Length: 216
Ligand SMILES: Cc1cc2nc3c(=O)[nH]c(=O)nc-3n(C[C@H](O)[C@H](O)[C@H](O)COP(=O)(O)O)c2cc1C
Image (cartoon, rainbow, N blue to C red):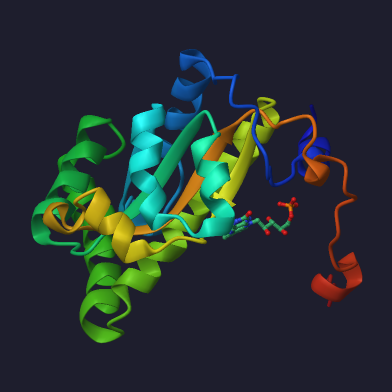
């Protein structure tokens, strides 16, 4: 499928076929897509949790608002996205070590370039603007976009879900203890053929209302 066709054909799944499960091979591709998501200064401030057993999904339900419960229960897999509550020095050192290990930079280049740039932006958001969680949330939503687009390209249906009790999800997944905080979850699976959303025409504002080409 070409990229525009994917954008036109994808839709938010409202009802899943509970009997269909995403293959392990496809899930591995989706996990890898999430891992490859770009983020500001390569900060990767996230952790993703995957649940696919009936018991695991049931355990999430107290944190899922009523209108979304079925979308979690009947989906094949659910991915919960969390962000770090603290972008501390240990984590920044870990990012630097990974960039060096991956051969992206020499240790000197990394320390003088990407690492100092990253520390500058982290300091800006943590200490000056004091909006680090907001900044991290922006990065987390890029991952959502990647996941939704990749899933659609692979013929997998998805539901982006913000309709959650985030604090309840934090408690269920014991995120506080891990220095993490829920941002959203995405259900993945194969849509029930009766899902009316699958055949509703897409509705978006016209291009000229949301996009301006500035030529001079
Ligand atoms: C950030 C975000 C949060 C959303 N939260 C929910 C949700 O909690 N439950 C749900 O059924 N749909 C949710 N949606 C789906 C939107 O309503 C949907 O994307 C929008 O109406 C456009 O329709 P489409 O995805 O079918 O093109 C969410 C979408 C986004 C991008």
